[in-house]
Length: 117
Image (cartoon, one colour):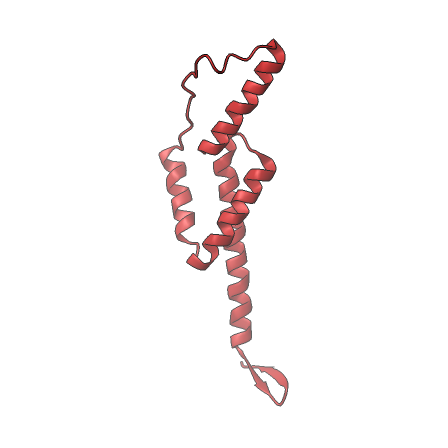
């Protein structure tokens, strides 16, 4: 969130410099408004995070960082982007779990796999 706020601040300063032709950023740095998640949104994100298996956390973080770098979202969009990454990871976990269940229910017999009923 802070990184997105910083990027948004830098973009607005760059636009201001272009429009006015003057850079006053050295003179004073005004306190920037910060964006906070609502308690409900934070709880929802925490609930989804709790469902993620630890072995998927690293890839989830890498994917989130990749999307942040690619999209440079506004600060208000960061939680939506994070939620979409978490949903991707949950879907991948579900698919891999289903595939694992299918392979466990098959026993090799003479080079062939025969499903157990």
